[in-house]
Amino acid sequence: GEGINLWFHYRVTRLEDQLLVTSEDITERKKSEEIIQQMLNGSISAITILEAIRDKQGTIVDFVFKGANKAAEKVNSIPAEKMVGSRILDLFPGVRNVFLETYIQVVETGVPLRVQRKYAHEHINQWFNVAAVKMEDGIILTCNDITEQKDEEKELIQLKEELAQRARDRYRKIINSM
Image 1 (tube, rainbow, N blue to C red):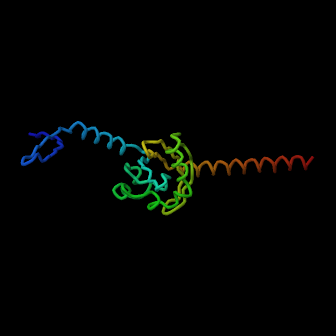
Image 2: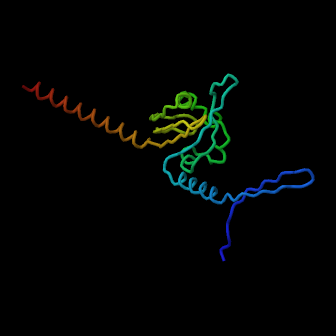
Image 3: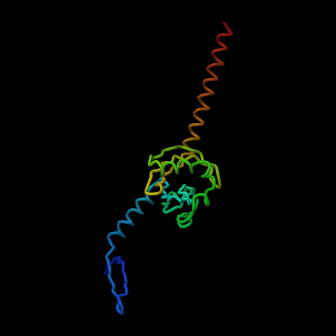
């Protein structure tokens, strides 16, 4: 047969010359964690959890990755195992100039952030649509690569300007021929 797959958490405590062993069935919690991870990994958005790192005065100086989904691995070109536990400024020093202050503001004010910015540092040169929401002493960060959309917008603006210039040139030609 299939057998039974259960998860248990055991605690062993010493009581004088004896051991007290307690167990707790954590199967449902583990199943819930797996479902949440599958849901996160099924997202096309890069999702990371960042926890604030503070100096002795309590000022946020950096963030540490606490979690990342598969899309975050793709966007950052770094496996989740390498991101988790690492400081954001160690992996992405350019964040200091592009996003750090806004991330700090989200943690300190609790006001969610949604912004579009170009990030052109390290191995990345892309436009991102970024959302940050406060979570405890950190943020949940969701981002999507919108480089293709921005390139198309730029192309449309150029075409519009060319069309407007042609219309002006034609108008001048008509006026001058009168």
